[in-house]
Length: 493
Image (cartoon, rainbow, N blue to C red):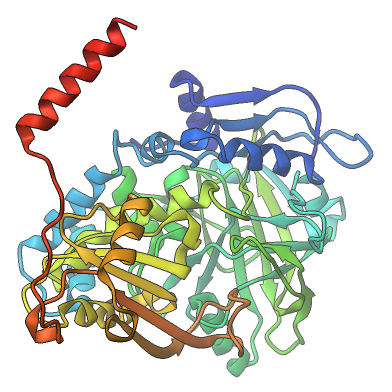
């Protein structure tokens, strides 16, 4: 289903018993983030939190409530995307690309794009939207970004950061749109810093504007249908418009309106829109530190200065936020949903691939577990190299491959086979490649080593000369009788 606003999603969470309303005043400086950190680490991700009375450090209230941990469970991810289970979307994606088997990953993505277009997911434009019920322009003065309850999440953060923004840019030549989720540090009422990393499409668009010597129009959407923000986090390749993907997810095209101060379109259902420019000829501004999803602070670095020219919002807007840090946290559920939805595209190119998981402890790129149907020697290594060449999988530091029957979503089970099935010198490969810009462990920024570990059963052709031992397993009959005996004993106390 499609939500016409963030408030309609909040109402759905409330009806489903997935929302906890915080009616006491809570400070945007650390307090709200600390509560979300605690809640997200409870079993199953806890509840979504709606802070109805956010206040600043002096106790002055904001006009807008704050929603946090809204995506923070398997059930809420399904609710956000209008399904009982996000696996249903994976099946829909598989159906789109199944008709004509692709020759490679690039063709699979092309087929997916064509399928999305056939599903009438293309965005549509209208004259005016709810996101522009209230308009503030920089020339009129006012408090600007200070009106929004932007959170400071960790004590040593460089300031308040927007953490669920949909940053909208366009290629100045092709006019193709990109939507990325890049954190934004508030520097003043009408000024911020955009953290788009070296490998991101937003940075590439900025480079083109810099070469042309032209100001770059940028819009930032906050809120609206939760499918929009999710699409901004999804690891989609070039050529697939994130809002087109959102339209597919919500089964309804995203509606756009012209921005009021920049030549760019913005989603009409958003709760807030920030409009402005990046001056490509100017020097970057200090951004950070920031307590990141790695669980560590990322240091101060230079990033583009975002000069806000207008802020528009709904009359009854809700500010969406998340807090990242040492896992498990809300972002784990976002990443897991992306894997389940887009896994069919990878499986079309890697037929041996059974399942893939990003364990919470690996904070996305640090660790990947894959299971495969192994038919020939070194097939696990072949799969690893293919995955490292697939989009953002290039950042994966550790890939662990296991046999098809191993549940990659059970970290304990994977670690058992990792310990049992590998001979380190034989079963590990190392490569050099691009690394996540947020990875503090690499000797140099943006590049480092990656390791693949083959924890599958070994074949003769892989240098294993002994007979692989059989695992200890009881009979199905004995297992069934054991469950029966234990159940009776528990009933009798």
